[in-house]
Image 1 (cartoon, helix red, strand yellow):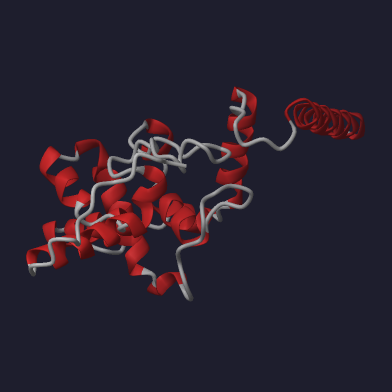
Image 2: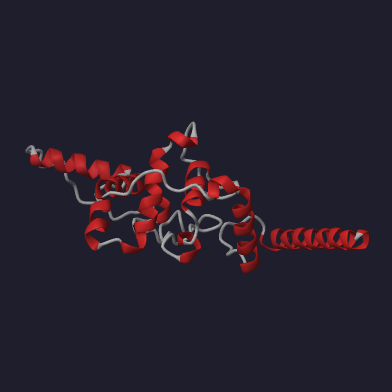
Length: 205
């Protein structure tokens, strides 16, 4: 028994040393660039660590918020306003931010996310994920964070989003400074200020 235990410990130490050596090699060759793609083993390890980091009780916690059409609309609006800037309205992650962070924003419609339990999805939304671009959105007592549970319902709905829902979300996305300026200029134009709307300059930086 003692010899078996020593073998297990030795194997764990060697595996850990190999892992850190490989990570060191990756950092040496690619630096801290966010442009590189994580390799399959890195993705696998990160997901396993994330899974183990979520307490078992939390993983098994069912969604306490009953699903309804009105609740799904709340989740849609919340996602469009808070999450779509990185994850895109359709959950694909195909946005300027989502494609250029490390690791890149996942496609939330795929099995890697959809196979997670409701409790795991809630934990990630509420607590965020360290060393990634995923922030912690929850505040205070997790038991009181109903908004994150509503988002879990909406995440489940992402693979079935309709074109009408996507159009609705576009109107709920945060507006950029350029959008606000153009809207203000258009409002002035409607009020009779013909100089409010000017053609864009041909120079772009």
